[in-house]
Amino acid sequence: MLKGRHLIEPGNLSIEELEGLFDLAEDIIASPAKYSEVCRGKVLATLFFEPSTRTRLSFEAAMQRLGGSTLGFADPGASSTTKGESLVDTIRTVSCYADAIAMRNPKEGAALLASQVSEVPIINAGDGGHHHPTQTITDLLTIRAIKGKTQGLTIGLCGDLKFGRTVHSLAKAMSRYPRNRFVLISPPELEIPDYIVNRVFKPAGVQFTQVRRLEEAIGDLDILYMTRVQKERFFNEQDYVRLKDSYILDAEKMRLARADLTVLHPLPRVNEIATEVDSDPRAAYFRQVKYGMYARMALISSLLGVSGWEGKKSAGGKKK
Image 1 (tube, helix red, strand yellow):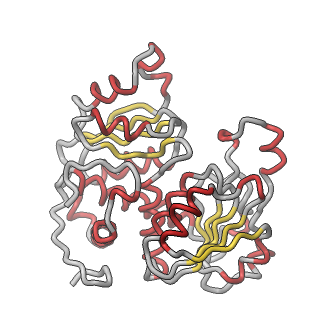
Image 2 (cartoon, one colour; image 1 turned 180 degrees about the horizontal axis):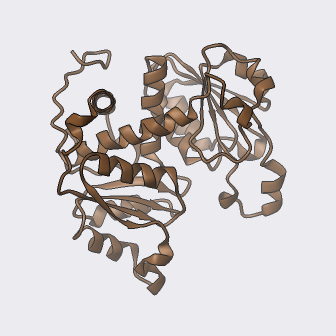
């Protein structure tokens, strides 16, 4: 289905292809032994030019659980970029060693450039404030697993909506499903970019509202997607300090929420979710982490054409 393709942004995959990945991920969860050797002899390169814990380790765990191996670096200082090597030359070199490359780079458009010169599939693991498609696949799989659907939901996006690439990717992806509605919760300085409103929400006829206070919106939400204010995206540290504590989800605010609310967060968190919320059954961000590994297992095996998955989907996205 996806063999040999690149994944640069969520829009590279059709709804049917996304649902196929979710079906495969659910089968991996149910029968992990069936997939434990499908990538035997395959190599995944993880090139992280920007710090990461969950994304990098989940790619490596995913590949190893599929029976494959990994190579790469978690610090650009350990690569030849410190000697002045271009990204193009790095990708051309690494594609001689690996069967697929997962790359994070702080420069927007880096993954697209890599895909134009690579001999093997490129998986964008985050390019600046642009896209983070595997986090989006993780988020959609988590929502489908917990809610049983990815449509007809009211989704609150809270915090840094300006720089948050996970927010941008999720907004685009969920806008492709019918009857989803967004509540955008942020200070004026961190509002969602105009291009999301004008090129995603409006053309798709997606309903959205903008509010400043989490308390006035939380009671209406099916999903609350919290984000941290990202220090690394600010040019002015004073602005970061002023805005970093704009929204803190705590037990008091959770009392205003519905019993079936699901709280998600791409992590890492700083202090935007109090640790007292972790024990609330509605807090799903650590389950989200585990779904991320299974989502990447499904993606890697599909791009390498080794999954052996033959599940058929009905119109509702479930296997026949």
